[in-house]
Image (cartoon, rainbow, N blue to C red; front, side, top):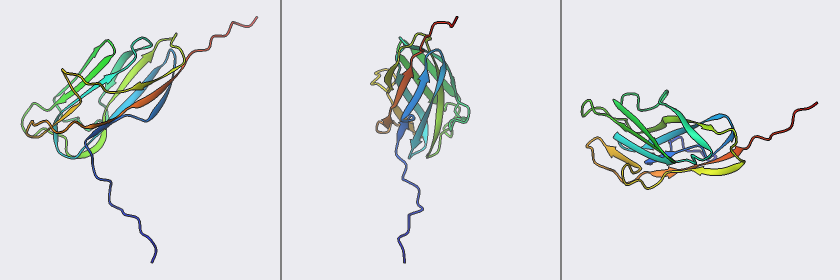
Length: 164
């Protein structure tokens, strides 16, 4: 008999995660999918993010294909270098997202045309107003979820003079 691999899925962990790495070019829009995993049913999700507003600006957010379609209230605040995403099921006590993993939202950012070549980390931060948090079906806050940031490499635009 040979060794057999387990067909059991990996256990769920409460976490928010971004792609490990992304590439972007100055002057273009790039997208950052934000995914999450939860081991208990959730009624509230708060995700604060930091981004370098000196080289880009927030363009839009999409919840298409998200696991939170049934949530009534989806909000986004963009202030300076911060993006705060919050989702809340408010119709009744039965609105929640079951345990699982998948997409929360996709953020679209536009790099300025003069963005220099650089690398930055798209990360969360300790927000006193809306901390990274999950709330269960009883509206009780569960321990702070894990967070996996994303390293973004920006390729600056290389200018070359027109040819004669």
